[in-house]
Image (cartoon, rainbow, N blue to C red; front, side, top):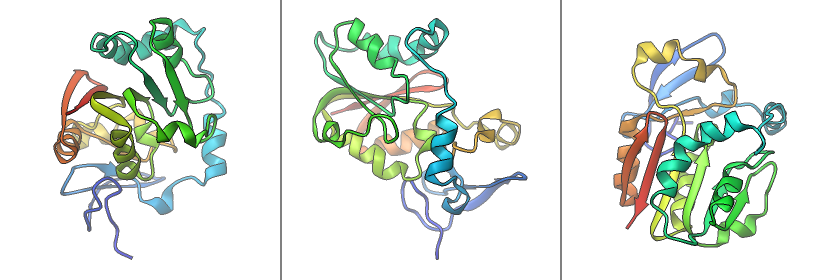
Length: 212
């Protein structure tokens, strides 16, 4: 079976890095770095990892962390804009922050809020914080989210970005066994162009895409 990039489906990615646990490949087309599917956790193991997360809207430190995406995105939104927090986790918080600011929110999470009906609607903005690095099929999922956006809508992502191979080899982010996709600024720019989106980077781990 030929290995393919899970974002753009290009064949024959090159080995980028190896550690004691996993291999990391890089796509020559879109620059995505990813762990091959056969080295992913199974669904039960993956959920067990997420069940250990203790995030909640009452945690001011977690709110501050999410503020790195919330602040630049909320500044763009028209009054009453409707949003979706995709991958909200067991303690939805970003959606609460938007609702407190007057923006009606839906939430979706494959493990904790798996109401597929919300993925049939259209939204003025969609957020996915610390989500895309967990996706085994990022091309499919991100493409779906773009379809869920109205023209002029925003997709806000938060994930730490790949810089250099030297930094990658020492990076704590790759130690999480549920992290299987690693995006760089170049990857996001490539994907935005393919999707007809405009991308900006308000912070070192945030990206906001605008749909025309």
